[in-house]
Length: 246
Image (cartoon, rainbow, N blue to C red; front, side, top):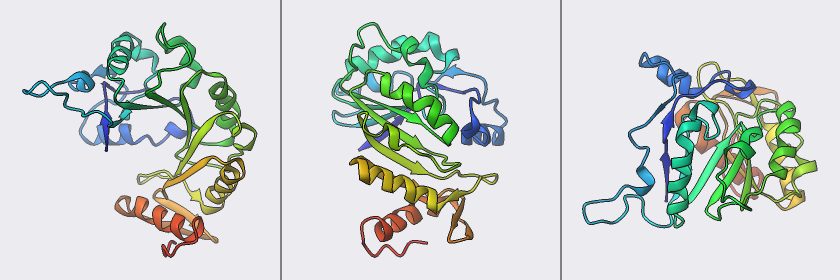
């Protein structure tokens, strides 16, 4: 099982992948300023308890942290130490931290981090080749029990092959959602799949995005079907199944 934990909300656009941020889009639809960073009511969710004294989040749960912000956001520096304390306390949960700000890693980890908390996966977002060359060397250099790469939204062909022998456990790929989505090309996805297969790294094609190009044809895919179409494509082309993908 998995859950999303948003200890704070709001972010600042940081790189090319942020141009059509879904958080900004959703907040704008309800008249809220997504650049305003504030602590959420669910800040203490990992250590919150039920009336019987048991934790709300049961042991073994996978917790995706800060999905409406960035865990290493500068304007969240005042909140982070307490968030780390809860992560350390709930060593029976598996926390996944996804960040574009891997360059701030050394400034944001707690004093007892050492080689990494065993229950934390650090996932670095790499949306294009430019950011790949900037962020991947940093990701490889940071101490962490488990590291992943998230190419979502995938905006260009990305060459991860020079970095995949550096302890990367998984690469996750997906297109961009929303009415202004930029195209994600099937050939880019397949190229990353081949890179991961050659390096023995796990690969997940998470979603197509709203604007997906394959064999010269651009498909406009509603949000409700983007994960389904990615699963079908993966079943058909990556595992030799009969997924009837695009």
